[in-house]
Image (cartoon, rainbow, N blue to C red; front, side, top):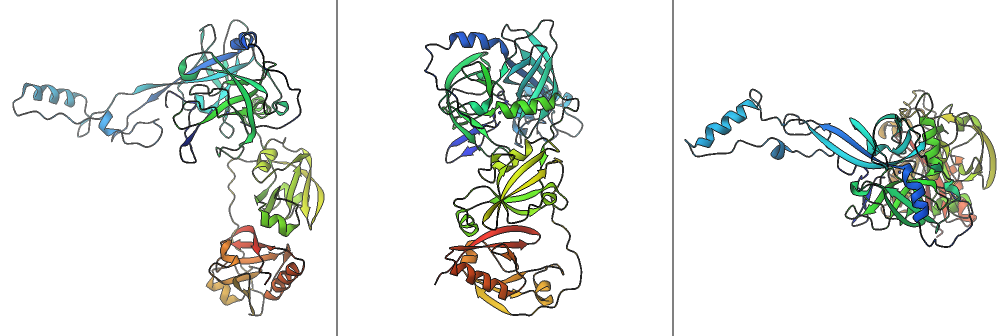
Length: 512
């Protein structure tokens, strides 16, 4: 563990790296206010609620020179297990070093480095006067000992109440004889881009440090996980700020500082915080008797709505999440959600894009009945869904193909969309290793640089739907393509199966 447990580097573009620090966001109007003459009064009030967090971890050296607990898999044999120096024969140093190495080397082995302690620093904030502290999970991950340091330099040993690796939230508990100063949660949805914010934390181990800036953006996705929805701020955030609070001008926590973009690890004015509304919900679940986070589950496999897919479905612009398949006996199937539906709204909230839906579903209470608006057959439909419980260890895999008698079909072929298509026959199923009960039209050839090749289709793919209608023969595909052309559409939507994997593809139509 490094001295900055709140740093996990990522590349962004040519020379940007993201260092982990906290979670999600939403939007509501709030009154603008002028810049304050000073932040001193507010800072003095908030500093006692912010803590420094110090962790220690025992790093053991294994045979061959690798260190347990060391991030990365770098061979450190040259540093931790040096070779015995070479001296001229008869040198007085030869016997001295030989004796030293023999005493510290296992029989037939190399010298073993003694276990050492690695120290990391981070930040956190008190949410209950009785001694509850919230921080980032990566600040205390793999720690053998955790120490919470108050503003008055009081050191308190901490224990982990619960942690959630998916959103990088952890709750700690310390024992204290006196009430602590707790911070108040704020409404991160009410925070607007341009609002003043204060960040307080422990950068580089310097202790309680206050920096000011504005809320720069919302709903940032930095590719750190499925539930990315970060607040962005230009308040200076550095190594050691991880887990610290981001305050609004009312002294309320609206975010947990979690990550920065930087080429060197220092602040360049691009920091990210987990929205308080999401962080609070996770923290409250971690404080439950189970100390576990339960996430909602819909039971759909989704993909992005591209410009071509939007046009082919009659949407005014790309939005929502396209359902590629539904889980058998899952909440979505029970509610009547079908492959080809575009989920536009979930529980009253607009689904901005594909990445937005998993977070909305995950944050919904298990067994809650919600309204879902889908786009189907070029119009909106409303459905009621009872949200299920997501099992984190659940593995989604393709079903084993069922064996059965193949239906008798003709062998007509069709050349369209830059592909040669054929009706499924026993010979073609055997040739492309398709299941006996496979249904649709098989791609037997793809023209180089044609519309099908542009979308990555290849021989052996099976087209199951065209324009959201099931197709079983090449003649049905031809009619759907002709209908789309007559309607003036620029593309046609196909549902394609490849080795059990379903996906929708919008293929460009050749109007000529």
